Length: 441
Image (cartoon, rainbow, N blue to C red; front, side):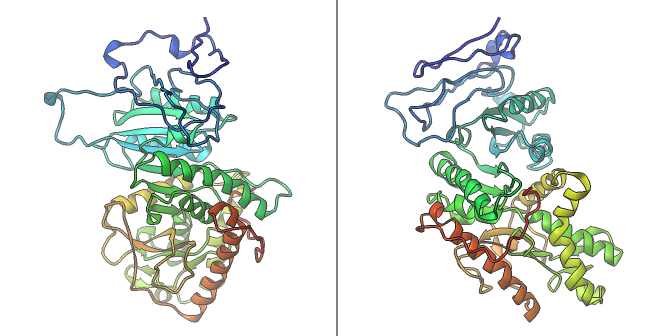
């Protein structure tokens, strides 16, 4: 028998399929208790469908105005979305407060690897319970329900809540981490400027949602390409969240660079430190071998073939994603998920003395002379509190500065191309060249 439930504020209905999990009897001990008032929504939403793995389903994009007198019913079955009201005797000293983690593009390949790492405790620790808030689209929503079912069946003791939805204003509620993975890939014949506009609109909307409903200190990692400029658009649309809290993922590029240096030097990868990726996540990125170290020694003293460093090494890192697509027929997913884990850990774990990590961060106030008001990958250090500071003990030569200027020019051109999405006037696209990003096709 199909189950039908219609939110009283909306017209229309949709039947859930027979044998849906929502037809199971509710265990009163696991009933959800503290229901919240409604979140920002649009008067033109489709009806809300409630079932075991999809407590919130709404049509996006939405406006941030809340209809007067509106209420929201949130209901989940099984163990998810349950308020764990443990008695004091049942709690241990190792328990910590719940962390709310929002993930967009949650039905995609990258998330398929990432979500289970998050749920297992591999990222935030074996004593840190989490809630996963998963954002999908109309097209991917059925797959997202499948993802939630797999998480449910995996019995992760640290995973205390899973909720899914299509409305960022609901999914991002109280998020303390937002991992923005979902983005449209570039199709045949699409210009890079077109991709910037299409994906920019997605990240402008998500920035507004984060600004309205997320934690005021939410940490945002933008993965969807072009990630640097998408991160800039997102932070510009979230003025109430510190710009410093937004990151564009360049950790995969750093990991690739470390791998190539380790292979060339004949050492294990953990002997490579101080590896910086400067600039954009594109083929103009600059893998910095001048400041990198192997066993604490400058790379140039260990690998004396400077021609290899400037040409083959640099090109391998810049084009690694494209080569992987040619070999496998799709863009990197597992290694991207690993790099997201690495990026989070770098912010919640103190950076080893003398070392640093790469992240695309807001450039205003940087000590390197890089243009301000863009998101630029630079060397960062963290005390493990989720914040970071830029490394100051960095050296430059003419070769490095010349390469940095090229990737800086590209990011400035991208910024002009999305001016209509950052509140800076009319867009003007004059991209210097079409630098294919890994995974854009």
